[in-house]
Structures are given as structure tokens and as C-alpha cells.
Image 1 (cartoon, rainbow, N blue to C red):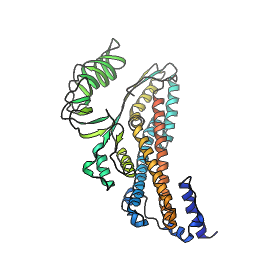
Image 2: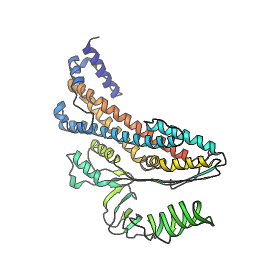
Image 3: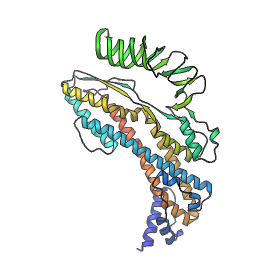
Image 4: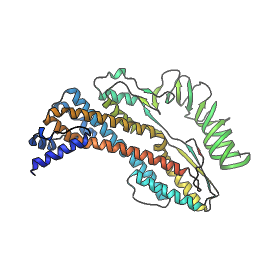
Length: 425
């Protein structure tokens, strides 16, 4: 087979493989055009490189079509970067957990590291004995995205929208920010203060509720001097408190009624919030699907997360050294896993789906250019690799989210195999 014929088959094979469900007419494209197509692609290996290309001029396209393809490629690149960061973070967290529990290794992928961590946790629980009762207290992470950053991103990537009129909305009840009037919901306080409601964090006096830290006073009616209380704590609680506080509360306060909030208000504010953040579903402004997907992936990679707080209480463990090893490893490494399993889960899965849909739409646009074989073949050759990378990235994100949830479930299991308590999860 000649070089031209081989190249022709490879490029059109990629075309057919990329656009499943379409027909590929090999006879309609000249071998010389295919050779040029494979060899003449601009650099689309990074977001910066893609941003520098004028696709309409480069491929002889209508301006609108060129913008759509560029937007799709930028969204694909953003998703690839987000997926890589997510995988690296999970590999580090689960790899550290597995190593500290006796299964060291060079873990480079999140799922591999987490499977090792799950196995290690299971082995140690088995050694602790069936009578061991493990209770996991979790103060979950809270991850939020900047609405201002989303609006700024969309204003830059879609020339057809007016940056001054962009409105980004947040799922009701999931908005937070600085409230210069009355806050309804909860207040994350900058400094310890009186809490007229439910205190979550720590309380220095007259506390009554659950406590994942040190309880000083009474635990389940019995004197407690700094021990973790697996039940009701009355007195003082150093961490992961949730209950009424008659002293100063550090952390957040779920308000009984609208009140002033000197920290961050989560919920509703009687005036427009400043520096608004959303820890739920974002409704993007009216812009192109490609632009919104690109910005969704960009903002998701920059989520701001308060770290999860974890405390483990083990009763009846057969080996005190193993109890300390298990407790120390989980309290050190599990918070990062929970960042993904709880804090980033919905956002990560959502952005992966959005970018996949956009890539599919751009693929259809490329298919429609088959009437111009020279343009269609070259464009196909140039977008195949980045679009495949985006599909792989979406699969990677789902795999990492799924396995992080498995780690959380395993960490909550008791030595006998049943689930232990998991406050706040």
C-alpha cells in the first residue's frame, strides 16, 4: 500500500472512529489532501495554544463555526486539566492512606491508589477483631465556586454577550458571601461569637450536642475530661460540635432567625451579596454552549473548599498500636478524599457531562463540513486527539469520584463489616 493510501485510511479511520454513527466516503477525499491534513495541524496541545489560533482563518470557515470549534477545543482542554488535577489529588490522598496502613507503593492514578487504601483498611479492621466498634465523625467539606469569576470568564470567551449584563445564578439556598444587612441561613464567623441557633465547630461553654473533638464536662451523663464523646456532650467541645452553645461558638452558626453576620453568610441576604460563591448548581448566563462549558470546567478546577474534619473513635480494638495507626492514617488523609467524595462530587460529574455534550455538538459540526473534503479531513485530523482526550477525561473524573465514595464507605465500616456512625456526612 502506498504512503498516501495508508495515510488516507488512517485519517479517515480516525474520522469514522471519532464520529460514531456517520458514514465516511473514502472516495470523496483526494489522497494528497489527506496527507496535507495529517501534517498541517496547528498546535492544539494546550489551552494557551488553542487560544492563539484564529480557526476561521486557519481552516477557511465561517466566523461563527470557527468560534464554535475553538470553544469546543478550549472546553476539552480545560476538562483534561481538571481531570488531571482531580486524579493527582486523589492519588496522593489514597496513596498516603495506603502507605500509612502498610501498603506502600508508587501510586500514580487515583483509582489504583484508592483500591489499595480500601484493601489496607479492610486488613487492619480484620486485625482489630470483630468486637471493635468504629465510629467516624465527619464535618464535611464545603466547596464553592465564584459567581464573579464565572461571569468574567463568560464575558471574555463569548464576544456576542455584553459583559455588563451577565447574570450568573446559584441553586436556591446554596449561595454564600458577604452580607451587609440581615442573613437568613447560617453564618461562618470570622471570630468566636455568640450563636443564636445551632453551633457547628467548637463551643467554649454551656454546650449541648454531639462532639467529634474533646468533650469537657459530661458525655452521656458521665464526667468527661477531654475524651471524644460518642454520644451527647454537655459542657465544652473542641471540634466538630453540633448543638446549642451558651458561650462563644467558633465555626458556623445556623441562625434561628435573620440576623447580622460579620463573617460569611450562607443562604439569603436582604441585600445583594458581595463576592458571591455557590456551593450548589450554577445557572450560567446566556452564552454559547462551548463558552459556558469551558468556563464551567475552569471554575470547577478552582473550587474553594473548606477542608473536611475527621475524627475516629474505636472501642474494643484488640491491638492498641493498630488502633492508633488506623486512627492516625484516616484523620490525616481522609479529608482530601472527602473533598472529592462529598465537596466536589456533583460539580465534577456535572462539568464532565457538560463538556462531553459540547464535544459531541462540535463533532457534528465537523461532520457537516464533509462537503468540503479538504477542510473536513484536515479539521478532523486536528481535533481527533483533543476530543478523545476530553472523553477520556470525563471517564477519569467519574472513576475518581466513584472510588472516592467507596473509600468513604470503607472508612465508615466497623471491624465486623457493618457501617459505623458518620456524623455530618
